[in-house]
Length: 298
Image (cartoon, rainbow, N blue to C red; front, side):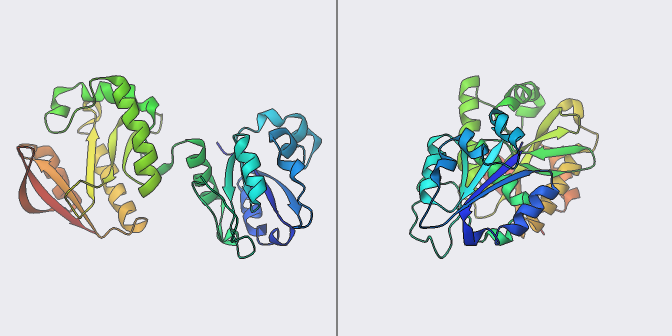
C-alpha cells in the first residue's frame, strides 16, 4: 500500500502541488518535499532512497528510510527521474510548459496537471507502477479487483467443477502457462484499457469467481463475462456482481452497450442476462459452438 509520496519539483511548481499534498495528508499519506531552481538542481537529494528520505520532515523518517519501500516519487526533473528509476523507485514524472523537452523515456504514466490530481489518482498510479492490483468496486457482499497470480490456485479449484467448464473455456492445464497468461494480461490488458476480467472475492477475502468487461476479437462491442464457483451459486452473487459491473461500465467507462455471449444450453446464464436487462440479438457460431448474442443498453 502507498505509504509516502516524495515531491522533487522546481520551486515555482510547489504551489500547484499544494491541493494534492493536502488531499494525500487527509488520507494518511506522509508527504516529503524538496524543491530546486533550474540554476541549482540539488540532485544529491534523489541519488537514492536513503538520501531522498533523509530530506523528510523528521529525523525518524530518515533513520527508518528502509521502511519506506511503499513510496511514490513525483518529479519534474529529467535528471532526478533517471536517478530514481536507476535506484528502482516508483517514479511519476511531471511535465509542464517549462520542461516540455524533458525526456521521461520508459515512463508508464506522465502527469501534466498536478493541481487536478488527488489521492485516488496517485494511489492508482502507484499500484500500477508497483505491480499491485487495483480495487475496482465493492458490492454489499463482494470486492471486485484486478486478478493477481496469487488467485490462480483458487481459479483451478473453481474450474475443476465440470459444470463450470461445460460452458466456458478452461484454464491452462500447465499452471506456469496460466501464471504467465495472468502476468501478460495484467500488463497488456489492465495496463492498456484499465479494465478487463477481474477477480471476485467475498469481503473476508475468499475468491469465489471472476467477472468483468473485455473485448472479443471480431466484435465491435465490449462483452460481459462472469463465472461464480459452484459453492457460491444460487445465492445471488452473480446478479449482485454483474449488475454492479454494468453500472460501473456505464458510469466510469462511458460504455452504452455491452454484449454477452451465452452458449446454447446454458439456461441459468441466459436467465441471469435477461434479469440484468440483456436482450437477445442473434445466434452466432464460434469455433463450432452456438451462442446467443445478447445486448445490454446502459
